[in-house]
Length: 187
Image 1 (tube, rainbow, N blue to C red):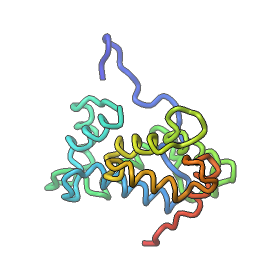
Image 2 (image 1 turned 90 degrees about the horizontal axis):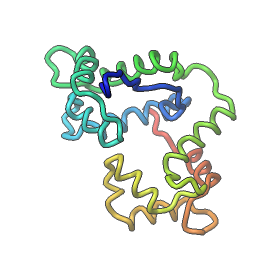
Image 3 (image 1 turned 180 degrees about the vertical axis):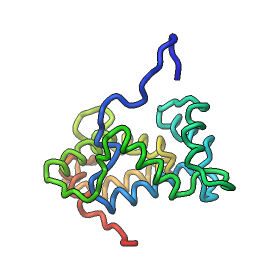
Image 4 (image 1 turned 30 degrees about the horizontal axis):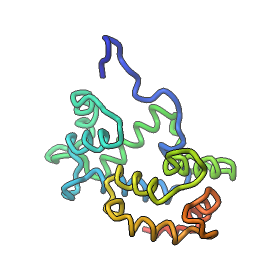
């Protein structure tokens, strides 16, 4: 990516939103991301699909640079990254940018867990008022390309399902409770 003759860095600081410290949540999250990026559902993410997904997330990557990086992970004869290739790319990016910080073998502290949840909450709390409204949830779901984002009624039901004090929005404690009670299917 060139701008005024200068190279821009893609990542300049570590962000805990890049990875989670829970092995099962990290694997589930990575599979969900793969499924979202694989727009045609063929089991492969092409360079074009990855570029489109990054653009939707506001991360405009140079297609030529992206192609050079991604093609080294695509197995001969495949049209794109399969899930294992995508996982390898993710691990390499994690090792390169974060020093392998998503090593799932290290026990996580309560403070690290709280920090991860706070980062995730901030993604949804777009206006920073300390609450997730139905409109904010809908906006994030739409950005992620999730069908739930298309219907406000479904979004409102999602809010009601975790809104313990029935104020019509989700505060951090309700969000934290919801995230800690999510059941993860074992594979």
